[in-house]
Amino acid sequence: DTAVSQTPKYLVTQMGNDKSIKCEQNLGHDTMYWYKQDSKKFLKIMFSYNNKELIINETVPNRFSPKSPDKAHLNLHINSLELGDSAVYFCASSPSERGYTFGSGTRLTVV
Amino acid sequence: GDSVTQMEGPVTLSEEAFLTINCTYTATGYPSLFWYVQYPGEGLQLLLKATKADDKGSNKGFEATYRKETTSFHLEKGSVQVSDSAVYFCALSDLGGAGANSKLTFGKGITLSVRP
Image 1: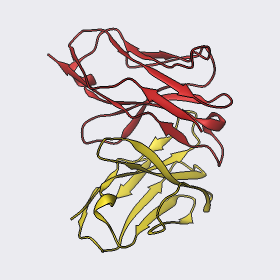
Image 2: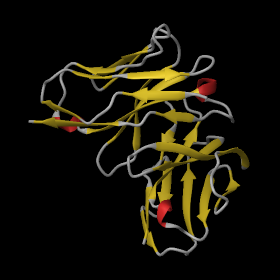
Image 3: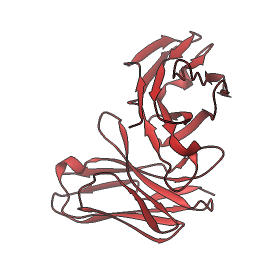
């Protein structure tokens, strides 16, 4: 019944590795997002997709590549991970009269 | 561009105290305004929203009124509980929160701790 689900919940990896985070929503929304929450809890948008099409790309390094195989899924692939990539990544979807719906987050730790 | 400014934290209150968390915004047009809450170790949950001037959003005893003249959306609760301890984020969305180009712009968040 989870509306927006992300996997994995925790991810610990070494510098230089490549990793992916998956997101799925069962709300029928057309638009999905990736947000990054830094160590000071500041949230900033990274990408948005509408019906598989990239809409927003906010000055994110090109090591980050979102992929949307269909409108219910938005995955985030990160190449050559760096220490500064450590953060909590949130997937979200909209529109909704009740506001944007967020997943529970993926805590990425790069060591 | 759009921006949201929240008061500096953290805030520590005793149970049953009155809570006010200030939030002001800068935006073109008529944004929708939101308060999100993040409980320890959890994701973001929508607490309340308002979509036009003078609207009041309310939920779980929390209230906030969309004030266009002061560009503010302050969060209030008359009597806080220990279970309200969390991080609170004020946010705005252009395009009324819908549409392919809409996005949420967040304030920095404020940590609230309520002691028994």
